Length: 340
Image (cartoon, rainbow, N blue to C red; front, side):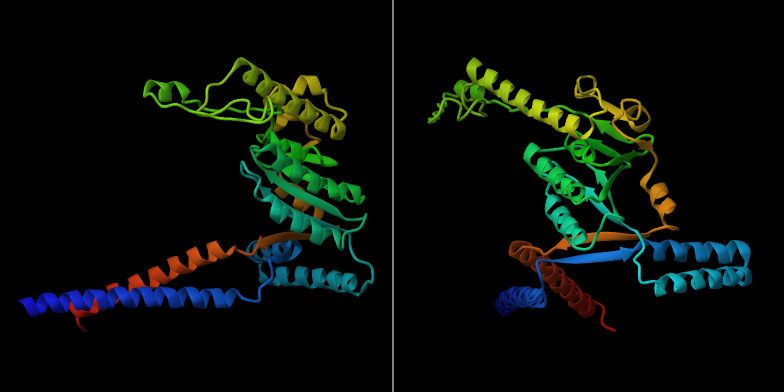
């Protein structure tokens, strides 16, 4: 019996060591594969080809293969003639922005816009689909500034909102020369909000003292654990009002047709209501807009995927290696219990 216990202990240690070694090897292998890669990957897909393929499938289904082939031959002749032309067709570049509170997607957006601006000219257009309920002022301020680079180059900027572009999201959208919105898309929320919990009374109840020292009268206005003052609250509200005033000025600059005092109340409007307040220019989905451009323009989707950081790579490599080792262990156990 003692022999079996010792053997079991030795086997467990051996399996543990094996798991550790395999995880380490897997992590090193994963990291080696990523060596030499650039800081990210830029993908460019021609949407005309995607929709042509869809049309061919539907045509073959509804018109019959013979008719579909004849239609396709005519289409290819036109495309060949266009390909021989030395002039580039007007192009629409499509970019998607799905924002979070921190506006972390700005890193991708700046790369996508930089790539587009290396080739785009005044006959082209950039279509940005914005989806965001807003977030930090500085993050969305930078995102809006990235879009403004397009306009400064004399290239038409169209912003499409299918679901929501509120607060910081609308700060981005209002930069567009032309703003599209789906009928039930949410827009507006031109306001600023901030809230801070305070547990000072709870700490006092348990005889916990808090000391905070600052150099500068308003280095801290409101705090989480300290005792807030009326002066601090007043200054905090003043800062919010200043941010709101800057927001209003920004919208008024890019949408002079808007009655800014009427819309800058923090309210939201659906697409059909937003057009009445001149927050948008057209009620239409981005899909419908893209389809309307396919005959006269080339439409390219541009997407930048940033390179993962070392910590992200290590975490993912460890996760994958652990999963592989765990699967192998269970396979071995199953084989030992149910031999073939």
